[in-house]
Length: 485
Image (cartoon, rainbow, N blue to C red; front, side, top):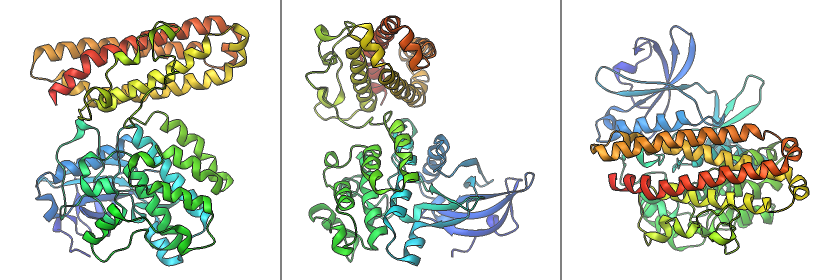
C-alpha cells in the first residue's frame, strides 16, 4: 500500500470536518480513505488524488468529472457523492457514501465460477445504473468486476453499486481534458476494439462489450481473449473471435452463450443496441426477483439511445407531410448528423438523433389516433403508456440541453449568440411547461377512455407544437452550438 501523504494520515482532519481513520484502497488515480464526519459522526469514504497524479495536467478536472458524473445519477446502484473539496495546496478530494462488502473480482477469485442466476442478477443491477447514465450521455468506459461492489445492507441483503466513474465519457460541455496513463484510458482486458483504437469516439456500446467480458469471466474465470501482453491482447481483440462460453463450462445454457457472443461483436452496431436490450435477453436466465428490474431498465433506456444512428422506415407516419395526421414537418426536413454531414461528428449529433427518435415515437402515437373513438378507447392503456415513455424521453432530452448546451451559449462572447439562446430558452421552458400540463390533463387510462376525441385533439396539438420547436432547434440552436464548438 502506498504511504499516505501527511495530510491524509490516520487522525488527520480534512477540510475541518473529516477525520481520517484508515486507508481502505487504492485506484488508478487516488487513495480511498475511511473517514468520520466530525459533526454528524457519520462514516464516509474519502477519495483523494495521489500526489504524483495530482501534478499531471488535466488530473484535477478529470477527478471533478467523476464526482459530477456520479452526483447526477440517482440510481441506487451508483455510489452516492456527498461532498467535494480541496486542500490548501489544491489537492482535490471527493466524499462518498461509505460501503461495506466486497467487489466481484474478489468474489470470483474466492468462489470460482459463479452460478448463472447470481451473475445475471448482478449484471442486471449494473444495467440499471448504466441505463440512467447512458440516458444522460455518460459512458462509463471502465467496467470490470473490481468496479462492481456488493454492498451489505442493514437487513443482511446485498446491493450492487457501480464504482469509479473516473474515466467516464461525459457530455461535451463537461470535457476539460483527459488524463491517460501509459497511453491507455481504461482496463485493456475489458476494452472494446473501438476503445482500444480511440477512447474519445466511443459511445455507450463500449460498455455493452465490457459487460460481455464480465459475464464471461464471472461464469468461467477465463477471459474470452487471453494474451501475454497488452499489445498481443489488442491484436486478438481486433482480429480474433472470442472463446465460447461453453468451451470453458459445458453446463451453461446455450442462450447465455449467445448473449455473451452478441455483446462481443467487433462492430458496435452488431451488439445489443442498449443495456435495456441486453437486460431483456438476460431476463429469462434471471431469478424471478431480478427479472422484475428489466421493466425499470427499459423505461430508463427508452430515454437514452442518443448515440444510435436511426433511419425512419418508409411506413413511418412522420416520414412525409402527406401521411402525417397533424401536418407535421417531415423528417427529411430535419438534418440528422448521420445523413447531413457524411459521418462528420459535431457537438449536437446526439441531440439531433434524439429529435429523430422523439419524432418516430410521436408519429407512432399520431398514427394510432387516426381512428374512431371506440378504437382509441380500446387502445387507451397502450396510448397512455406510449405517452408516458415519450414524456420521459422528452424530460431527459430537455435536461441534457439545459445542462450541456444552453449554459455555454448564454455565456458566449458574441451578443447575437447569447440573445438567440436566451430567446430559445424562454420558449422551450414555456413549451415544456405546456407539455407537463398536457400530461396532467391525461393522468390515467380512465381519463383517456372518458374523453377519447378530446384526448386525440389535445395530443395532436401538443405534438405538433413540440415538433415545430424541434425543427427550430435544428435550424437555429444546434448550428449555434456547433459553431461555438
